[in-house]
Length: 112
Length: 113
Image (cartoon, rainbow over all chains, first blue to last red; front, top):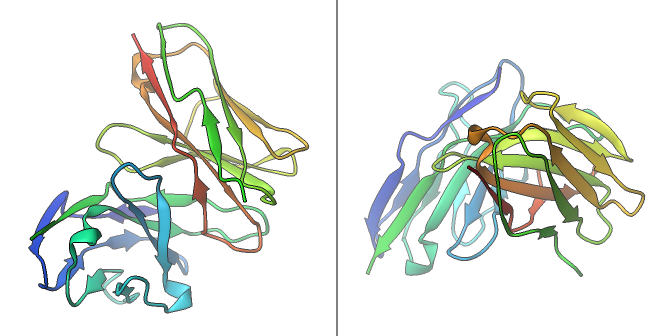
């Protein structure tokens, strides 16, 4: 079974401080992991995926298979980072078949 | 490029009724997925359609059913509504060759009384 755990429902960080949103997963195979973000009054959208090893809006996330974690990090928080963040796991990439399992989300608030 | 659109945005039904929710995929996308998001929870996978056939299903009973049409638009049907079906229903379209990148609509909020 696939499971994603985001232990923090709420996280408040001062502007300019580092941000770390925690995500742990449970999956017996080789997972593909993603971070999705929902800004106020906007739809849910992909922020980044681990396979791309990319940095988006200053955010990075490293897959740690030993700790089964995929924490999202940013060295210096900005006010526009305030949003709801969801970690998601996909365990199936057979052709045309994918299912994302989402965590319960963390609401990040950046304090000016 | 047109994004994913869903209708209706809000609706209220009573227990035992049936509901149909509609989704138009983003232009060029051939796969559509439906998710249920209860209050305070993350989206939960209901099912996915590819080339008009169900191509994966989550842990939802058969009274949740769907269709995908030749133009890749989709419907989610829920029969015999229960109070616990109250939730935001999200449609997401994607391209098979870009796994994990879902484009979500704004959702249909269903309230069952």
